Length: 263
Length: 255
Image (tube, rainbow over all chains, first blue to last red; front, side, top):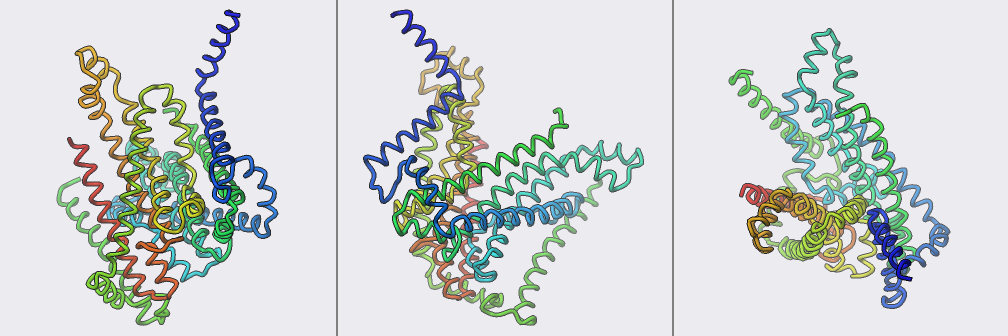
């Protein structure tokens, strides 16, 4: 008997000792607390337990228009991200590669980046309508700044000796770019892309929520007004999972492309 | 590089900055005066200036500004209480740090604006949902930087203070706090800034009052000139608050 309890204690300590297990336990405990609180204490018009949210998932996807709205938000995000990279990278290079343009335009970029972009959202919707165009523009404008700032930082951090060495070995301009600047830029470029992606996602979601006539904003409003927390939380969970998946994917890509570095 | 050339380059870049901004203003002016862009979509610079003057003189902005600032102050106070408190507790053991820090960091990577519809359901369209969202967004940088600040105090400082007989209070006051403060203060500044953005955003999306609400309302009424004036005003407020918080941060760090 005594031996048994001792062994239990050891097993118990081993389980708790594993940080991953403890983390999982914390998440499970939070979910359990939520489940119990939502089931027995909170008005079901306002909060659903996790089990009911999962059960409501099929009905969420059967709600006419919800899959289409999610899909629209997803491709708006994709297009906005591509645009943000397509603008942010050349702008970053143009600013970063010469000292003069860095000195002149970097303060302007930082100034613009420091501005609260949310205040121009109503203006953008007024200009571009409530369709995908305003959402893509708002998303892209959130992503351009972190990407170009990271590219400037990446280009700036190249040690001058590498440039001089390449030059003295007779490298041409594009060769220097391809073999010196580009590989050195990759890590900060990816870091910028991750920040930019978070920005684009935020911009698209802000615009989607602002425009309540259609899309995700319409459904969140509808589920809120009809006191349907199961489907509301389901929709939020789907979007959150999307955000986490995108983040993880880009982090993988970042590790993959930065692996030539040993330092 | 020689000094005069540096001087020359600096002048040149100031000139470039100035002409870039002037060019923007010129394009704006030409678009309204010459190229026939609709007045409703893009009001003339002079009209916006008059509206801004009117907004500032009449004091019409005051109630909206007050709502936004009160929401910001409440949200930040809540975030500080919970962020500093739980961050400090987590930082006390290595184990708790290893368990909770990655958890909090990964939650932080989810766009928190997604919670807005939920908070509107819980707290209604008034200030409550804005304060809740602002507090949630601002909690994460504060708790993460508190963990980082208090968790990374050099062991040798702690050990030597102990061996010299420091009490717990002395340890906190003279060892932990000074070592952690620079990191914590950066987190506080970041939390403040994003709380402000979250509050402006949620006011724009769904609310009764506040600066963000006023801008959205003017957009719906197509009063574009006045909306531009309010946008400029909101940008100025955010800039002023940023300057103040950055200055405070620098001051604390220098000590």
